[in-house]
Amino acid sequence: AACSFSPLPLTDGLNPVPWTVGHVAFTFDSIVADPLQLPKDADRQEAWKFFDSMRIGHATRWSMHLSGQAPDAAAARLFLATVHKQAEELADATADEDGALPPVVSYLLVYGLIHELWHTEDLVHTRHVHQMPPPVLRAPPPPPPP
Image 1 (tube, rainbow, N blue to C red):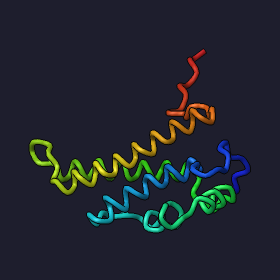
Image 2 (cartoon, rainbow, N blue to C red):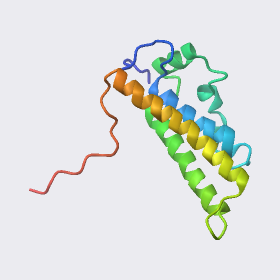
Image 3 (cartoon, one colour):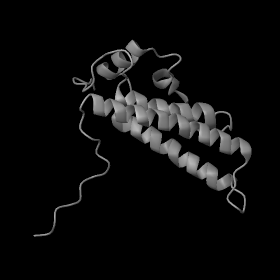
């Protein structure tokens, strides 16, 4: 479905929020999952078509987002949750008895995390500058019983 509204202006330096979330997940795949040959489903194998910042320019990111051609916010969040789970499983599976990770795994996970934190900081700044409402972090609690 096409997106008829975007709370961000189409200016240089601003990307659609779902694109940014998907890009973070895609980058995890590029710098962690791919070199370590971790399993990826078909959608993750095709994610470069939407989230590779070296191949998908700024204007194309927006046109795909606004036309509904790119994965929506829910799909981007699911992609990110999937790679987070895989990172946790990788750490659990490769840790030694003292909890230390092999150097390559440790380096790649930290590199992926630093990239994610950089984009998180950018999203916080973007929300502040453009006076966007805070994100919903979880579903509201159910109403109290009568």
